[in-house]
Length: 208
Length: 142
Image (cartoon, rainbow over all chains, first blue to last red; front, side):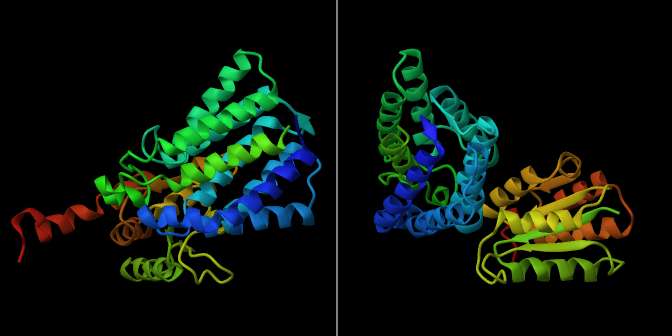
């Protein structure tokens, strides 16, 4: 079940994870991008937690809007507006509920992915965060069909996102700065897909 | 009158391009706006969708707003900002793939002449045509 309390655990845990993995994510980004993804995500979630504490949201729509605005303002690069769009679309999808379950989570993630694809124009296989999110969404839908619990669905989603991120290693980057490298982008895991997989893993640990 | 918004990772570049476009157009008081850069006074390289949104609000014209952005995250931030405009303003906002400097100059000349948003858009998109024939990339120009 997603509640405001669990969402606060989710963002606090993401703040800790991105802070801990800051160098790892920036190293992945140095190989094919501009080397600041880890630092950007850590700064972004510091702001997400600080803004939540300063203005605690009273429903899930406001909660996701607050996360979105903080990320757009502080992450920078392309990942700020992309993650910001994801959470903004999720806020519109869930509305003013104070708690919700798997169906709404799937609707939110699905609309979030649509939003990212609309502004970033990336398709599956372009070596972007989409390569983690599309299998993650598919895993959620399969779990929903199989009548799994929310906790089980989130665990399967996390595994699918991690596999999706690892599957970017042999791909040629088609979007963002990495696309300038062409075939030289082969052999590196995409940093955006990696930070997305971390987000799915944290969701499985905190939103249950 | 159509208004023009220029967005770059570098605020200084956007402002200089806006200044250049105004100065080479027949009227220097046409509505040209610059956005971009991040940090408290836009001094760092990058773009901020909220800063762009504020500029788009300021630049709004019911005759249309042509928007030129440099590339990458500037384009993505601009799309996010356009998405946050209300329906009427969003329907009058046009993000173009035209090159920011050449496109701005072409657009500014049309704006000064009182052209429609469609004419301004087309002029901006054609901004490289004259330059390409002048330089002749395929002839390995000397």
